[in-house]
Image (cartoon, rainbow over all chains, first blue to last red; front, side, top):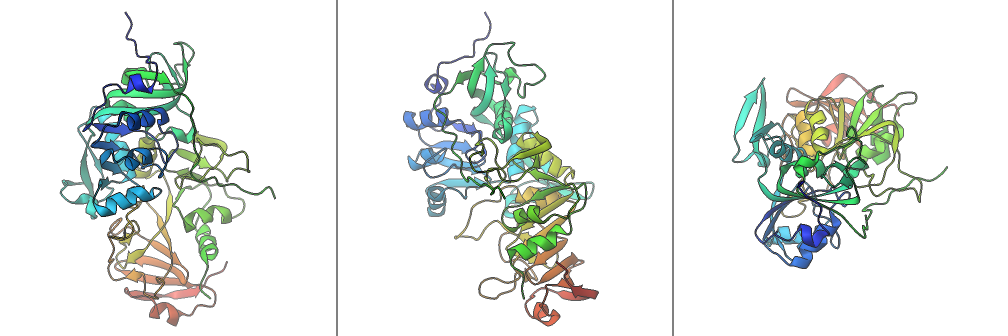
Length: 234
Length: 218
């Protein structure tokens, strides 16, 4: 019997995600976020989650929905400026926040997926990010030792996927998704279009299905634009 | 007259050379793209995973999957390429990006920069700034010379939480162009109509005046 990865929907995909778990969530701003799974986590009402995601959505969309419902105990992110409720919960102490450099966040996910326990990066040397961390000097430059993430689930969004879990991403909605997909103990992928094996060109696949445990075709993507910015035609 | 944001962007744009790969931070640095010298080819890197960032789209042509590091909708250009966030910061860390331009709240005379946090008031996060300043070969800072109360932001040492240590090499403020070199700011150019005396009065950190000091040409 082949390994069967296809699930019906976000409810089935997220069935065993529980309170207290650590989740990696793909996306940059609202771009490439796993909308269906986020809605499902809100619906499940699970609490005390540790969420690793570059941003925290906006007040009423993306991870902001989980924050609104006070389901998150700790956020690990690089930038949370778009979400006023987040900033409020953080400044008041209701929400534990670890702000880490964006490159460190990405590369710690990569380390997990590449089977490396630590990475060395110069980002944050000499700043409060370095507090409590081991510093090593290589070729005259200081680097911080940072650990690979250890997460229960990775929840990612892709443009197309096949039933073997192979994924293709689109434009800048790729961002953290392939890295987090590699790093989850269990990886859930929601895709805009689920196809049969053979429909994706092996040369064009961005993320091999070996990293993906559950995949489903999502529905009703809003794909909200955070800052529509246009230029005039003259 | 002190420069406005566009003036600062115009002056910084003069530093961008043909063939450079450039990362532009949010705020004033993004304006630099509008004033690049004629006839040169520059590749703009957007740290969320794009090389070859194009202009903003026309109204109605925006694409939710295509944004820049400031979350604005953008377009691509012929030769553009997408990649993931680890590769994005990998190329930054490995110094493939030639020039980083970003804003600052404070810079110190030995080149420390603070631009991500005002404790208790503004804690939005550092985003990619720490990676950029720790890795970049060339960093140009765009900033206001003084805060709203008139206090200098070019300081002996930063009072705000640091983004990076001993990394800033060049500053363009609304008052002039400065090198940061061996523990001192060096005034290279004054903004049009701004006197050397005014710059001295408004710079709290160590400042020497280049013997080649001149007025900016914009």
